Length: 409
Image (tube, one colour):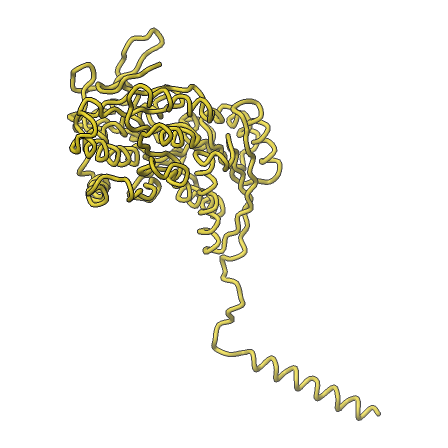
């Protein structure tokens, strides 16, 4: 019996050794994860709205999803914790606290008014990175874990404006409207530099294609109010605006423009689906680029730039699909050429020879001081024949009212 047991054990041992040897080949084990796989990071995102706005917050969600997929390919797993519909107030401070306590290693704040509340929390969590998107205070503060990020969206605005100008010029050439009727209506959130920079770049792009264009701007004094945005678009159409654009968070200006028989260009999202007879094109920031860079830096223990800004050339600013059913003939080819010229620096968005301020060529940037008087800007952003937007900081600072644009409020 003992001999039989010994024989069985020997046979089992031999089988095991044979099986082990049969797996030892020169072929790599495809089931083995790469060395950098399996990394996981917890990331927070605080949003002023939710994906249902089909605009601003929806665009951040696209960036989140894009970054998740891109990082997965590098073996990085991102565990997102998202706070939806957070108002610009104490709730934002609470949201940052909760995400930091939950173990998030980096927290993105997506609205302009979030930064003051983020900065109350950041000193308490020096090992957590806090990012304020579209802001500027974190770019110069003394905290090593606070950051600002924005993109050169004025480049995309200029191109979207060019598409709008092409359409208006087509209407003029066909005799549908007169030159003086080439009026753009613009729905703006607040009279901040970010909005002024955007609609000015858009206007200059439109005038690049349609020299007679003018613009009317209506502020709604709210970042995300679908009703106010719709009402503003309606009023602008009633004033004779043939085309509407926006810097506000919702899609209602697009649907209103269509209902009024006006054309439209969007921001943050392709709105052809909600206004197929009106929407020509749109532009947006692709937050995928920054999210990937920042998250990878945290994982690798590298510093995140205190102030980050990239544009068309880096894929951080993109145009949405052209609505080929309604754009002016030749738009696609001319737009491609203009975009390439922008990337190469052959065309400047804020070329000072392309606009005037109270009839004069701009030679020095200026702003309003506390007494309401114009004073030169400390950065001296005007040089080499252009206003250098987003050169000294990522957040836009073009706050100048140029000729051809009428502010209604």
